[in-house]
Length: 116
Image 1 (tube, rainbow, N blue to C red):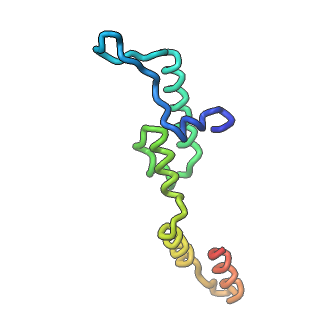
Image 2 (cartoon, rainbow, N blue to C red):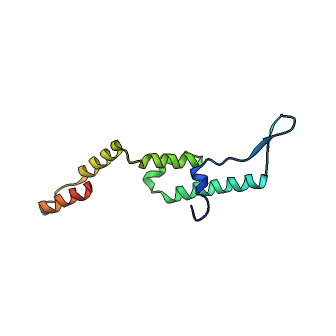
Image 3 (cartoon, one colour):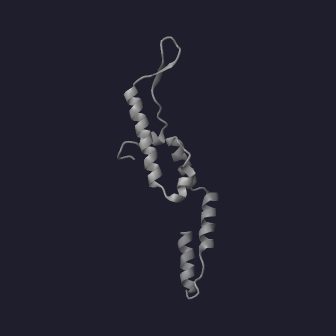
């Protein structure tokens, strides 16, 4: 997204510039061309994120319509805190098994790879 100059939209919740009309009755968009471009770029960025993630992650962001919220959801999923890391390590270790014709050293190497 950086190559398309879209990253700032992801990091910062860029909003449409508006002003209150002179009578104070309602909000007026400052530049409708800028507004249309901003909306188009946000949709493009959201689409890029959806197309870039695997099927297992799509369920987490399917109903998220705001670009910054989508990124926050994915960021939080991969935030490397101790609880998350421990759960992931436990799941990986539980999925390992010693093959019937495998050696103990191969099994221990698999465990070491998970821990690294």
